[in-house]
Length: 286
Image (cartoon, rainbow, N blue to C red):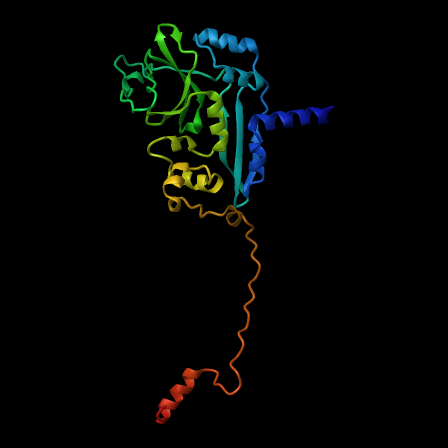
């Protein structure tokens, strides 16, 4: 009976992760692939959340919570025989889907709020950026290990009335907004595709990834790291890091040097030394 439950749970986890866990386990240097087993959320919990915030969860996110109340998957890399966590994929539970408000964090009456720091400039061809004032209702979907926040953003047309289809944005540490996807399903696929690598959300920003994040991307996600660069300049994106060589054992096999064959019979072993002797003896060379 216990083996059957374990097989059912393994099949359930494989469906949730779309097989990413097996790909990571077979990758060189990767160790400790962990997936937190979380039971599904109760339907009344989702209903009470919607009533509390006057927002309807999109159907794909609601179905996700009815399958698992949040998601947490991490994996590490073995460096000098010590595992170091590299990847982390998180979807907050329904109870941690908290409302981000624009209130001041200080008690002073004239303290600036997040709404005061809003950037009203919008880029052409992109959706209108979220705001911390009454125009939007924002919820934290992923804390991003302190590198920013992935947010579920609702638009408000009238007081107390929000749009039924929220969008997903990335809020960086400088409080600038970057559009990610229109649906939770698309975002979840992007999350798995990027393997939860450090700061992967910054690949959707204009200033891009840090050098360290680029190294991890080049090592574990070389093909889909930057498709625009591949199409524009094939020589500008070359994965020079080979994980098989980086994480191989330190025990090196001794290299035996082959002895070069000597010169044929009748020839001097060192022509330069014989010529020097000739010059020193005063006999001119022909």
